[in-house]
Image (cartoon, rainbow, N blue to C red):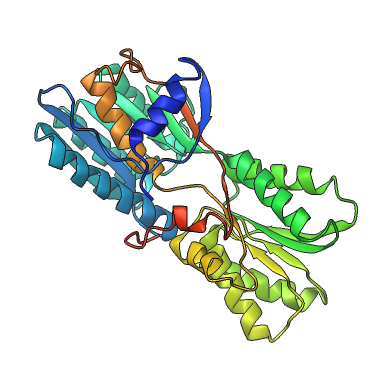
Amino acid sequence: MKKLLLTLLLAVFSISMAGAFEVPNPTPTPESHVRKGKIKIGISVPTADHGWTGGIVWWVKKAIDEWKAVDKDIEFYLTTSADPASQVSTVEDMMVKEIDGLVILPHDSAPLTPVVEEAKKAGIYTVVIDRALTKDISDVYIAGNNPGLGKVSAEWMAKALGGKGNIVAMGGIPCVIDKERNDAFKDVMAKYPDIKILDFQPAYWSTQKGLELMENYLQKYDNIDAVFCQDDDVLVGVLQAYEESGRDDIKIIMGGAGSKLVIKKIMDNDKLVKATVTYPPSMAATAVSLCVYGLRNERLNGFYQNKIPSKVILAAELITKDNASDYYFEESIY
């Protein structure tokens, strides 16, 4: 089911014009009534080294195609980078091309902050995705709700377990957003004295690491009722390890972010994968559209008053069988 970017903007502007907002996850489609004029937008994202970043690249390309179809006066420069140093170089190259806007998902916050700050000082409209810079210098920051992912996951899992059981858990790459997810998960579980977290180790958002870590957990613990692996890529490895073990004690395996594979499992009544929580790579497409609207300085249906929010936090939405079809995009690679 497609939701227009307009849905996002109306939700934001109907609340307030300042601060941060939590809004429903959009699947953006550009509107055609924008002011004419040539603009150049540079888009820099990490190389698709796992499912979620693959989804980021896919949604960016989708947004570019849709904007090109309705506005011939936008020129896009899309680059992917394998490391922070190469990403800095690509942003510098874009500045030489005299871009008007920059949309960036930083490989790493600290090394990318100086070059983005340089772009901002040069008058380039900047939209930062997901990984915040070390300075608050962007025009717009858009991300998923990291504490929300941990909180919503834990609340659903605790209820599904009836408030008791043994859990093993996995985090991502140790960093700020990973800590936010893990801390929120633990805070909820602390309210359930009959739920025990047996172990909590980083899986680096990697399918292979999830497989290896789950193999260790299965050897170490005789009884496991549920697994929280925080990421749907990790969940794939966890499932493989569990299926190969021949055990039948686990009742729930829960990832996060809302991959196509996991949502399909939920739709098909998988016996172990029954829910996930959104952290949508479609935020990259929304970021592209927000950059266009910001540069166009266009009044949008009476709500867009030459300003868009400086911070947009997408809601952490629970996906179950009841609503899974609303989040399933068959053509997406993630």
